[in-house]
Every structure is written in structure tokens, then in C-alpha cells.
Length: 202
Image (cartoon, rainbow, N blue to C red; front, side, top):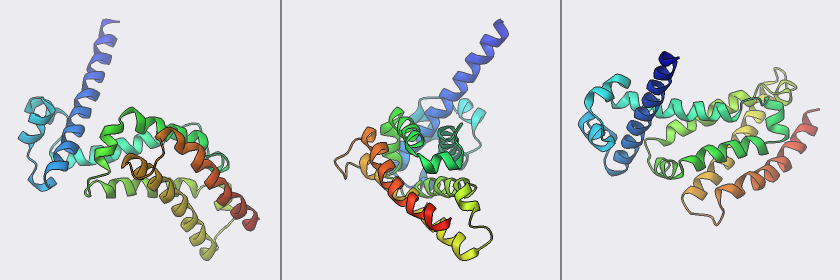
């Protein structure tokens, strides 16, 4: 029992250290180019020792990859228990999950979207979501018709990009909407696009 408690405590400590390191790198990337950030900069900003850094990461590039993996992991959690068909038919629960994970660390994501070097990591998440939704019944109805498949990918790209841009604009204070209002508005907008598309593919 004691061993299990110690293992859980070590796991929590490891998660906390990784989070501190990721957040430190993001804060530093707001101040200077990624290539000029040293391990010393990161450990000082995170208020940890070098040993703790090297227990989790090889270098700053490894931390950047960890940021990408963490976002993807959070998005996969949002999709948990949800098939692509359910996500397309009623995206609200998925959008609420995405909203919740952004809201848990709002300032971190607000900082993140302002950094050019991190934007490609976010786009990678978008393409993974498109691949996931391309396994839906709606996409499978298209079969091997390349032209129709291309249109389906473009359609999914459109709704995911639009959703991403709404969250981006909310976090950037560019539109007068709260994070919590986004799921309802996006659900309505996506529904207006998905229904006609679904009918046209039948």
C-alpha cells in the first residue's frame, strides 16, 4: 500500500515538473526566439534544478514536442467515448470538452497562440482531427471517389479551422464572446453545414 502511494506521489510530481517546464518554455518563447532559449533559461524560469529537467527531457526541442503531444492527448481525451458519427451529428459535447480543457489553463493557451513557432503544433492537431473524422460513416459513404473525398476533407478542414479560429479570437479578445458561449454557437453553425452535406452524399 505504501509503495502504491509513493508511486502515485512520484507520478503526480513528474506531471507537475513537466507542466512547469512546458509553461516556462512557452513564457520564454514570448520573450525571445526559440533558438536562443537555453536549458539554463528554462530551469530558472520554471524554478527547478537541471537534474529535474534532464529527468524528463533531453533538450528544448524535446519540450516543444512534449507540448504538441500534450495538446493531442488532451484532444483525444475530449473525443473519449465519442465516435466520429456522434461528433459530427452532435458536436456540442466535444466542443464543451475542448472548452473545459482550454479554460483549465486559459492564460497558458492565450500565451501559446501568440507564438508563431507553436502554431504549426496546433495545426498538426487539426489534421489529426480531420483524419479521425474521415473514419465516419458520412466519409465512408464517399467510397473511393477521390473528388468527393477531397471535398469531404475540405469540408472537415473548413469546420475545424473555423472552430479553431473562434477559440483563437476569443482567447485573443478579438470577438466579444466568452469561451463558455463557444460550444452552443459552433454547434449551431456546424449543424447548418453538416446536414446539407449528409443529404447530398446519400
